[in-house]
Image 1 (cartoon, rainbow, N blue to C red):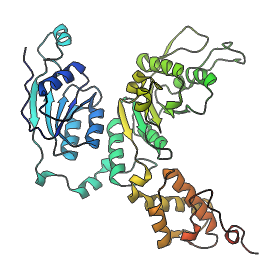
Image 2: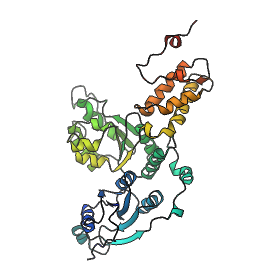
Image 3: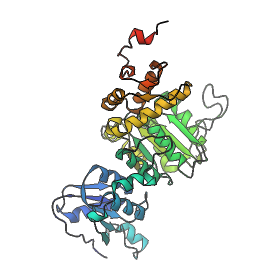
Image 4: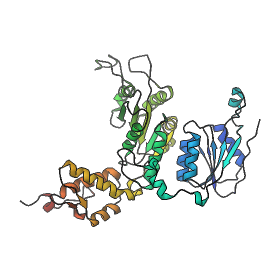
Length: 400
């Protein structure tokens, strides 16, 4: 049996170990023996991408037998976007070993090859990255900032697959738009996209809404209903505000994700359902799981491929294009001529904190499009950023 041999690296700089095989990750960790600090672990290719975005890693130990992403495509992405990270490819088992031996000796990883870091001359030109069609805005989305181009790329990477996706981000940042884009760009686009707001359904009705019920299952069940999961068969189920699910329902959802079967209330039969699940949360699910307020096993199931949306204040280059888009939409809806912003108005928009993110911006522009009245230019005085910021009576009620 071959032993895992790791190359020597300077002590400065951290290492990232990415593999679905926990035994292999542990072996690499032991073999490093303090040579790299810090050392983090990723459960797969998607998790590795997220960690690479967040930190500066000197070396990535990457299992070539990933379950969630194509390793060659992932390698091309890493070499283009993280040229300073050296990659060591690992096998989670020896190809010539018998199946039983592979299972029992998964730690016998083998160093396959090391991809050289790109030289400065090979680093991608920022303009070429911006022009890359894989970084173009998703359907229904506006913005070309670096943070958003990263989101577009991740969505296009995972859209063709059946991998469960967790979309995280603050309220009003566009999580449902990402879910709709994931569905539209997937092979399931011709099938249903079923949206469930977990916070909007009373706890007592959640199970019957999601899993369905048979006639007579409870008082008022006059006819059988398939449930929203079954209604999404062949398509995508979008669970918005998934953090609001009660713990009992989390256990039932976990069972569905593992078995791909639903059992309606009042029935002992199970029905197999082909559904791709996309979940969204505006709170830290990992933190909730750590505090035992959300099932840890369900969190890992949902976050097979996490996509984090930035707050609007973290993508300020997109504020003006978004504002102009909303303004044009408002003008068209009210049959008004095309509107524009005064310079002072644009400065105010760009300097605002936008705690409500894109949704807040949309509401501010809607108010401004009403207050501009017969003019064609939105001025600074037309922008109201708070419910408590009173509109002057002279503006609110025009003189006869």
